[in-house]
Length: 435
Image 1: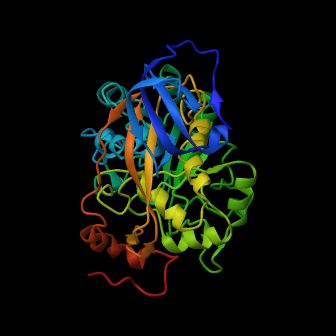
Image 2: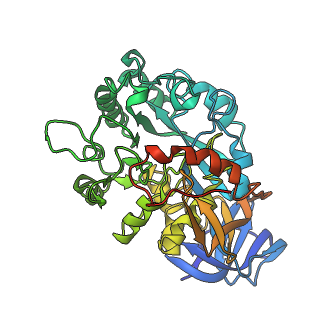
């Protein structure tokens, strides 16, 4: 299938650039073919045999994959204002990611700083899931190492203020975020009520809710029908992130190592399951058990922040590579970082595909076939036969430089993260031996 929009008006002879000879994978348009992409004035003109165009510049993508600009729907990029914040241009755009969604770094009282100093200044397209807590992740809990967290007081959890901020910033706020963990909610006392308020705010604002759920008093499998459950009480289109973490509140029953029925039911009603790899939220053993049941993620994301961009997450192509290793089909891996996240946030008309007329967000990836050892968040390792590496990226037609994580893999980070071994419930039988 080729796409060629005859209704677009452009110079038939001269264009800005062409990406040639690559294997184009564009799940939104059902494309998996070797073809060329013609781009002019930051916009995709056509896909197919573009011999009638004379390009000022040509990029030969022979032997590479050409995809829509990658979307990472869970990062933390409120740099300097929050301890977790990374620079998205340095750690995302330079790794092939043209759009990121900051997952709750800012709440209603701190959002204007995220907008002015990050969203408006970055070359990466930055969108936001607004935290239900007004101060977001400014400090406390896993955001700074201090005890406690953003839900210790329900005084800061306002449905009205959250909804108001979403409505006033609909151009960049695409959802609401809450973290459900007892250690950040006054020992779990505030989790249920904060969860109720987050659901209510997302309903009032008409946007999806993304839920971080680990080591929580909110049950993954609910036997008492009167209690709120997670993901049971999420709605179609909401996102359950950190899907493959191995801690308490895991999607697996630790005694049987089977997927909880409430999780399967949630998928049936179209709750979206997101990776949110992070520094502690991806376990090889959990992911392998899920893969054996054909339970793959709907969206693949990094949860990239200051604690994991040097390992174990590294970047989005690395996390994508882990799911390729687990047996997730290549086209589905690409779908999980392009069309599915775009549709989840209601931006499918703008991003997530190579449709002519859209901004030219294009990523070129190389599937490297050199075996490499890669760790999960607790430093269990697997040897991957193939790893995706970014080769080139254009955001709205502008070419940006590509970087690589260094070192990769990072043994120092592996030694640090292996300290979590005794806390995890679903794991290998043998503790990893690190150099």
